[in-house]
Each structure stands twice: as C-alpha cells, then as structure tokens.
Image (cartoon, rainbow, N blue to C red):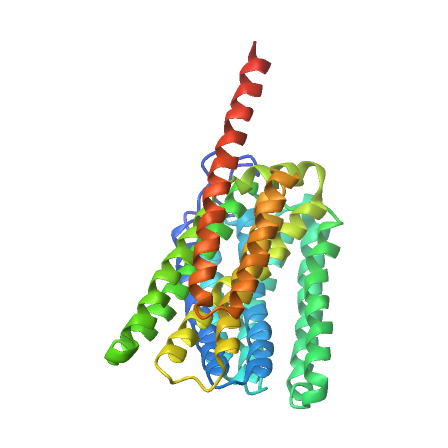
Length: 404
C-alpha cells in the first residue's frame, strides 16, 4: 500500500507493503541504533568490571536484566517501524522522543547492577508514551488493523504500569529477580496477544536487515571493549604476550561469528514464517536476545582476560576464562538455532555446531581459553562456508530444473 500524504508534512500512518522491493533501513533507524550503542556499551562495561572483581553471579544477573531492557526497547521500535514507518514530521518527532528515552535508559544501566531500576523505568516511560501514541495513530489511520494496534497500545500501557510498580519491588533483593521475570514475560506476551487479532505488515527482509545491523553494532562494542582494555594493558611490557593472545582471539571470534551469522539469508526464513508459521517469527525475533546478549558478553569477557594477563583481575583464571568461553558457546549455539536451522536442520549442520560448542567450553580448562575459542569458531566457519556453498549450488540446480 502506498503512503499518500495528507499534507507535505503530515501523512496518514498506513501499513507499509510487506512485499515492497529494496526495503532498507532508514537514516532515522540508523540514528536510533547509534543511541542504543550507548546502552549496550554501558551494560558490557559493568559486566566486565563485575567479572574482574569476582562478583560473577551479581554481575551476570544485572547484565541479563539490563540487556533485556535494551533489547526489548529496540525490538518494539524495530517491528513497529517495519510495519508503519511513513517518515513524516510526527513520526520523526515521536521517534526522537523514543531516542531521548533510550538515552535516559542508558544513563540508568550502571544503577541496575546495584539493584536500582528507577532511571531505567523512567526511560521506558518516555519511550512508551511515544510508542503508544504511534500505535494509536496507526489504529486511527488503518481500520483493517485497528484491533491489533489497539491491543498493542493497551498491552504496553498495562505492562508499563507494572514496571513502575517494579521500582520499589526491586529494592527487595529476594523479590527482584522473580518479579523481573514475571514482568518480562508479560511484556513479551503483548505482541503475541496483539498479533492474534491480525498480522501487522512487517517486512521480512527489512526486519532481517535491522537485526543484522544491530548484531554488527553489538559486535562493534565487543571490539571496542577489547581494544580499550588492550590499550591500557600495553603500558605493561610484561603482559604484552598475553594481551596479544587476547587480540588474536578477539579477531578470530568476532569476525568468525559475524561471518557465521550472515552465512545464510535470514529474510527468506522470515518470509516463509510470515506466510506459514508466525510462531517461527516470534521464536526468531525473541531468540535474538540470547544472540545479542552473548555477543556483548564476549567483549566483556575479553576485557576481563586482559585484566587477568595484566594481573588486575581479582577473579580466578577459570572464572575469567569462562567469561569468554561461555558466551562464545552460547553465541555459536544460538546462531545455529536462530539463523541457520531454518535453512538446514540436518545433522550435517547441527553436528559441527554442537561439536564446536563442546570444544569451546572444554577450552575453559586450558591456559589460553580465549585462543581455543577463537580457533574452534574459525574452524567451524570453514565448515559452514563449505556447507553454505553446497546448499547454494543445490538450490541453483533445483531452480534450474524447475525452469525447464
């Protein structure tokens, strides 16, 4: 459906065509992602410090909660924009309000690790006021999806009120995590409930591109975290050999995981999910929480390994090693489960990825766990490149046969 302007500045917020060709991310979406980088960096930095200071349980718990807040805010914006972005003045202004909320959220990330959520919730209130106005505007201009859009608006308001009540609950340490899990589950139920009233017009290939771009941003933060730590470490000549191991490992892990993630076309899977299996679309979209969080945690782990080699870490060698190998193993497993399984669920793909996960985790017990992880992931990449090439040749053969 084309977007017909009511005036040169304000247009009706009608659904975008989910089959639109050459749909790409807009400059406003890229600006929004850039602001989310601040929050991702804050969460990774806090995790790095928690691991290095041997506060692993509290650090990991705080990181997982903080990253959920970042990821869920980004996800809500991304899927709405895929369905309804008309790029008029009102849309831009409401998006800028959401960006301001993201910056407030980012400022509150360090406080989450101390058990205080008021600033993050305030950022969410700002973002969600703007998002609810977007959904209500879409409900007004799009009668065909009015029930769906109103469900989104109502669900977001109700759950946000629950998050406001979470502020005092979070001060009680024994209640913090259970309450967070309940409210997070309620938040994730809103899209499932809303889409049952009618599927919004999100664009499969646009959504796949948006997720891919965010993955690149998170990997960029991983490189930044490791580079910053390395820059400080090179002031210590005695630690340079260990630091060089971290540098080599970071290159192997980051670039191999980037290549693995983009080795198959996610848009094709989402296109099939949109037509035949909405549950697959939800699993793909929600499952990326583990992909993004693991990628950010790898950067924190690499920085903690630099602290280990420079003797600035209070945590043991085993703990700092696991801070790299565990998120790397999770990232590899989730790339297969989320990105590649939709293309090839057979043992020929599952077995190499499963073996890689086991070997990466086993590397925790070696003197250079980060290097083991890097070498294993690089070897897995070689296997996947060959598998993807073979799948591409097979697909071309079938297509050619079908055209005869």
